[in-house]
Length: 303
Image (cartoon, rainbow, N blue to C red; front, side):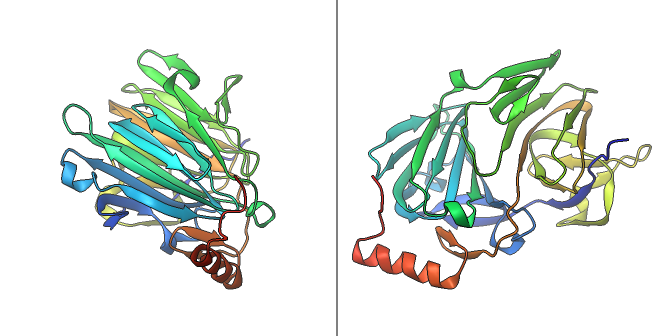
């Protein structure tokens, strides 16, 4: 019988300010290494107040990671040292492999109602690929397959494969899964997973049931993890992430109302992490070298 993954931890995040003054909710980050390996950080930026986001993320460096921006409302203008320029709109994705070093900017704009909503995920790179050539992948909504699994229930495949369809993201490093899942009321969804991969969900809208608590289950805020009185399954509401134990299957269900969530997974590295600001390497010496190179103008190795 296949092992079903349980919920190991639930996080509701911390309000913070990044870039030139963007207000966002950091779901997990530096304090949670290596719990989410190979994932480093997840930020949720959501506001209808332009003062919360218009200053954006002006030109800044990255090395040793990938940055993934998924825009839900509004748009984000991208530019980088490779010469890429793009505007990412509703339902679209920027997947940037910083590798040996890239300098880029991301400048957000709200929609006609001034609403901006999206998420940024940082993905670590293994030591063997920290200094790979940088690359930008702009994923438009037309490139993303959508599978209808039931009435009003869909799976958008940004990365990974489901039902013989594969998402457009090309990533040889972590074999990623990045799905945007919408379940109608009462709908269930089961997904087979590689046993060793790390998986978590982030609830975008509504509340869903995401498995039984594990033996070492913990919660950032106990109010946010309410077990169903009949089944004991954990109800995870909007704006919370649930990290799973290892296993072969993930099982999800919507309650009496619909739920929409991101399902994200990837192969962990189990390597040391040296992280300061926008650069993530394996040793403090590598970090020091990166910042020294940025100061003297030798940071960019490709492009």
